[in-house]
Amino acid sequence: MKNFLFTLLFCVQFSFSQNTDHLNTVLKQLKLKESQIRIELFTEKILPYDKSKSILVIPKYASDIEEGSFVLDAYLLLIDNATGKIISKFIEPNAWTSDAVILTDVTIDTGLYHLNKTTRAFGVRADYRTQSQPNPYNETNLSLYVVEKNTLKPVLHNYTIYRYRGEWDMKCNGEFEDNDSTIDIDKLQTNNFNNLIVKTKITKTKNTYKNDDCVSKETIKKETSKLIFNGKEYK
Image (cartoon, rainbow, N blue to C red; front, side, top):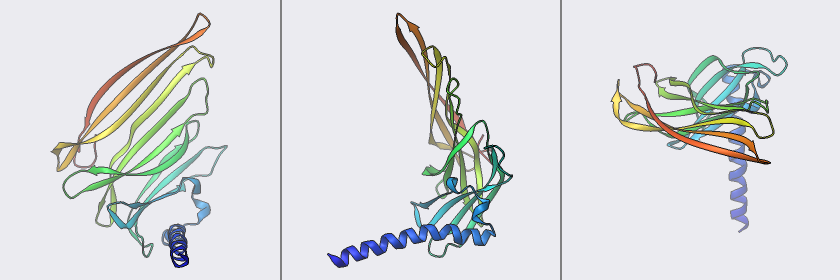
C-alpha cells in the first residue's frame, strides 16, 4: 500500500511538474517573458489522439493595458510532451481585443473535427461578455487549425457558435435571444475537406409584466447551414 501511494504521489508530482515546465520551456524558445503574456488566459491540453503531444495557446500582449482594455497576439503551439520542444506553431497578431466586450476565457477544443481521412483539426474557443445588466451579451467564437508540416494552419477563423443578447428594464419587461450552434461533419467534400454542417437553435424570450406577474413567452426556431472549404478556409 505504501509503495502504491508513493508511486501515485510521484506520478501526480511528475505530471504537475511537466505541465508547469512546459510554459517556461516554451517561453524560452519564443524568447518571451511571463510578464509579456496574459497568464490567466494561457491554456494547454494534451491531444487525446496523440498523447505524446500538447497544444498550447499563449496570449501575448500586443499593446499596453489601458483602463482594462488590451489587445493580444495568439501564439498557438504544438509541442513534444517529453521535451517541451515546439514542433509546429502559428502566430496571429492582434487576435483578440478585450474592451467593452470583455475576453473572459480561451479554451482548446479537441472535438471530432475530421476534415478528411487523414486530417483532424482542433479548435480554440474565445469567450466574451459585457458587464451591462440592462443589455447582457455573451459570445463564443471558434477557430479551427490543422497541423501542416512545421506550422499550424488556420482553416476557420472566429466563427460565432454561441451568442446571447438581451434588453430589459431590470425588473421584468424585455426581450432576449439565445443562439446556440453545433458543428457536424458532412460526408460531402469541397477542395478535399469535408463540408461543415452548422445546426443552430434560436431561442427568443419576451418577458411582460401583467397582473402583478412576470410572464415569459418563448419561441424556438432551428436553422441549418453549411461552411464550405474554399481551398484556404471555411466560409
